[in-house]
Amino acid sequence: MATAHRVGIRTNATMLYGHIESYDDRVDHLMKLRKLQDKTGGFQAFIPLAYHPKNTEIKGSYTSGLDDLRTIAVSRLYLDNFDHIKAYW
View 1 (cartoon, rainbow, N blue to C red):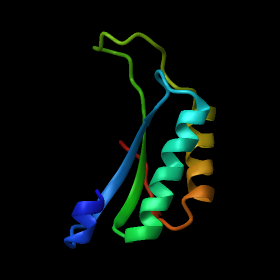
View 2: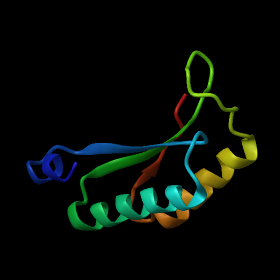
View 3: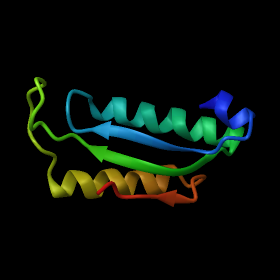
View 4: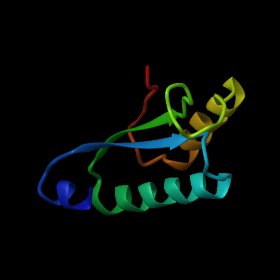
């Protein structure tokens, strides 16, 4: 992404959550996005993607509505250098 931003290509950032990661992993991901956005300013939006276990070999369950809301809320607070936080279908 840094290379794309350096050559003038703006991108979106995503984070798949709710499968095998821990909350620490989520925070680490957000931290890396925030630092890169501070450095390049190239992200247009952040889009959190909830894991859907249907039709996959990776077992798990769907995220709860509360987890989805918390993820969006924390993202909005922490990624205050992103203009947009978007929902994925």
